[in-house]
Image (cartoon, helix red, strand yellow):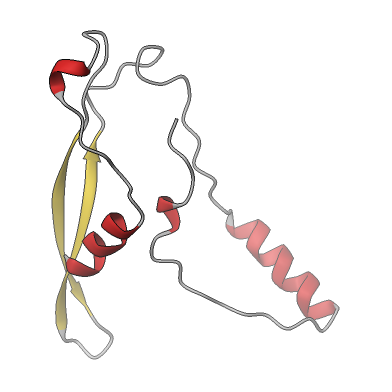
Length: 106
């Protein structure tokens, strides 16, 4: 939980909102922890924790206009790997733990 919670706090992901200041036609989104038991390649087990937003009270057109989450398709990834191999370009891999903390939420 600490590895999930610390970046959220460091990046100022949210701010406290007093319910009395929220217009009646808007919703306040809550959150909750979701836990999952993961099995490592060596068959040891560990717990994974994620803090998720309870977005179900939102109403399209009132609380949001559209949603967008860029996701790479496998065919696009394979094409980029093929182009890199053809041109002898080096390929690097990285894991972005806090990828969704960077874009502004509007």
